[in-house]
Image (tube, rainbow, N blue to C red; front, side, top):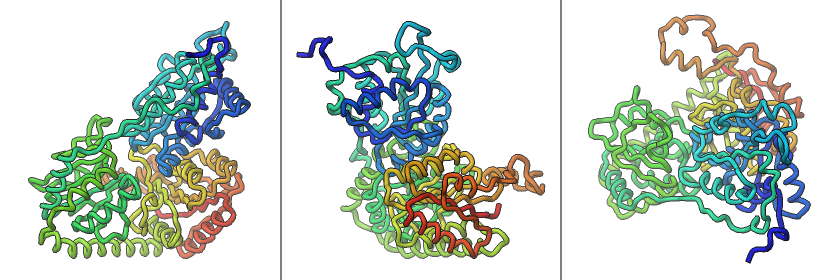
Length: 571
């Protein structure tokens, strides 16, 4: 029998939301506070005074950085975290991060305040002019296309159940962001506190691939003469990573990692054949696509007549995207590691053909030739007046030999020259292209894995997009020893490449300075980092780079404080 209302223990809705987040497994709230935050801040103090467990709330001085840190924390732990932003203006700053997370199927619980509805007469009503200026007819529209679910808290009594539902939906397959707006008057209201620490009343939804579909996929792969796997978003887990390596070794299946955002196989595995789908796909009779938004470019790559394609992943048809018309003769839906383990089991009882045995030697030889060519190209990148990005990758790979490390690349170090053998050792910028991702994502990963070496590599434009002053302040305030490498070519290199790809012989290709591409003169990025007491260095000569990288890695390893190296590279 419930207690009478007048004696029932209560807590403000703001405090209840915070406490509930801790109870369901959220470790951190990445927050940038505003005038809508008094009930949240009061809730933090109230819960602490009542000895109620809370997530750690961290001040993040820009919402874009908060979203990037939540992204990185999830990549490192597999657990969704919370971001709290200031009304519509803070939510607008979260939008790029939400778009990145939606594209990459990364969950986050995104909250923002909502300007008070009432002008007077209730605790939390409007008190300053921005209470009028920040009101919107449809605030959730700022992130609607990038969220799986949204809601506005209507009553204090809903606080616990809304948090439970938000977390369950965000963490359900396929994962992604959810959004809840929090009106100030509602947060100021009281709700019962007796259920704050009870188990969540709503479990996330997960599903596994259909056994018959796994058997069909295994039959196609086992019977193929020229099977190919294209991977883009990892193998789901360390176990999935190991099982995929064994599967492709057993069945001599070449693996292409095209525009990879997370590696699914070691870069020196004898079946890893690089990032170029040609000529593998044009000759394939069976293609297994492992969680790829765009497994190849239809404008460039044409599949052989009669080729069968298996699309596999949490959402193998990528239903969020209006146009994605890649062939799918068979679809395997589920978590990536479950699919890989299921395929490995289904293949175990099947006989290997003579074609499979012959294929092993041929693929391994081609793979070795591709790696050797990538290394030679990287070494040539040290010969010019300005070094290449590939040379930076090769040097970084050498400097990290023997260390447990994660490299993030946002138009920074390319994958091809690197030797990486472990799950979680490489991440690239999201395919949504929301710039400024690498630096805050690295901070979130470092927060989750304090002892791991985390290196964020990025172009000069990407660094500027990351709100670097905010990122370096966060690194210093939280003691996060991230190493940042800024590969500075004084331009939007990706834009130049896109123009030349579209108009190889056009007017823009013949001018000395292509329009709308130059970032010259760039700031002295080492001074930006030094303002937050970072260790810094600047490298212009290729021969100097290995020594500087060794010194930078030694610094972050021993002093446990941040470092930045600005590296001048060729356009």
